[in-house]
Image (cartoon, rainbow, N blue to C red; front, top):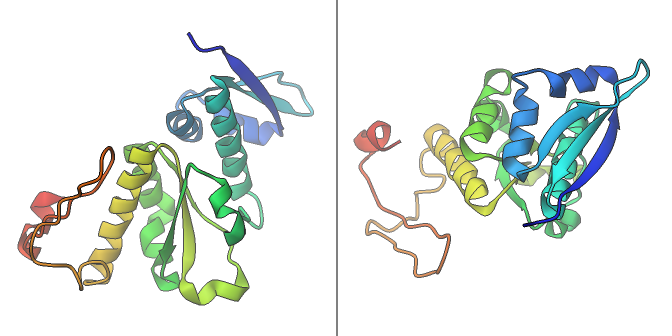
Length: 199
């Protein structure tokens, strides 16, 4: 049986309310992506603390995701230089054309929220780096490998719908079956009229 660890993170009381609500969407997605248990403890008039409990790996992931979720609601958003992306082995970054960001996010961010729930991931757009803005906005996807892949395919589907050919233009008309062991992707061509049925 794995040892149980915990970490406590100080938050203001408004932030604590977001995590303490009985149907907190934010708490649920952090727990799903990390496997940790999240609860609000040490409530006081000045500040509260959020406890992250689980295995060492779960606590580390849960604490990181929790801090990201808090930062996305603050001015400036999450800053993660491209050179630091490789430091996170639980991260997948997608480039989204800047003009397509509102479409991918959805009204009030609902498309991303639904994708997070479906895939068990944490997703948000990273603060832009002016030096490389022409390449598109960076969408961060944190979580387990299968969840990250599921979220990536969902976003690819949305972008392909808005920009036909973005991912399929140079695809072969024959099935492409992966020979990799473990988690992998097979590509099966379908007719455009079958998209709604398949998806």
